[in-house]
Image (cartoon, rainbow, N blue to C red):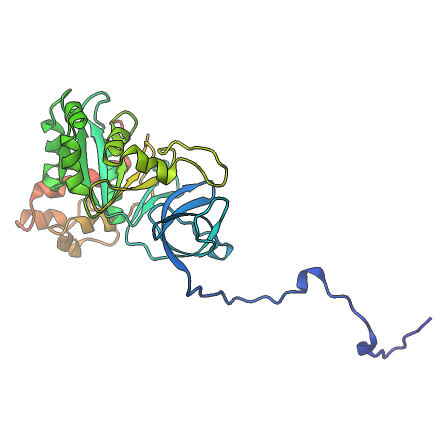
Length: 336
């Protein structure tokens, strides 16, 4: 038996490398300069369908992105198998900077915000004039989310054969929001679809609305069924079909150069994430008047400088009232 004295020769000792320490660790991440550009069309249980050139490619998020998640509308960089063939999977290695973000929370007390769609130019708020009755507070909340996220709002009022639109439009007249009024007969004849399409051409438009307002019917008319089937009817990984409105889905606009993002019906639209200082950017006639506001002003308090700004004739007082009505939606329930 070999014995070692007090001063052993360490070079003579054979050591076995640990299993967890055989690979060198590094913080350097590959740049993926050869990655292909893609557009996220839908997300389903961790699998993302992306449009790469003219192909539908199934992908997953790379581990190196950490907690950052890609959503519908994101422009991404992909590597791996980009053929789009069945049972192939690419990898998203980069999410490009977003130009706009539509977000919501489950309610006003929920700190966790959910990104509904990225890079949309416009938010089409679809509401029925009757059956079901319009919910102005929900419309207000959608408008605030649009202004906060950098999207331009569009009102689409359906079922005008059941009730006139004037009363509802009067609430939003001072906001100068474009709108389209449709009836069931016009939807069936296609006349209403053409008017809506004119507002969507060349833009990425996200559609929101609660159940029963006719949102999906309108989207189906704007995007023929064969296009919906070719884009998102079957999960290429699980092989199971999904109803297209259970998750957001981007669809190419038929007869125009644009995209329609169909989102699930909403019961509520929480605004816990909204900062009033961002909403004011959508009111260029009022924004200069905030220079005299106290720090962290809610724009609805006694010493708000906007009162004097409107009183001096720099802006219409009705516009200030509309701004405050929108900002106050966080303190009111959507059914009020």
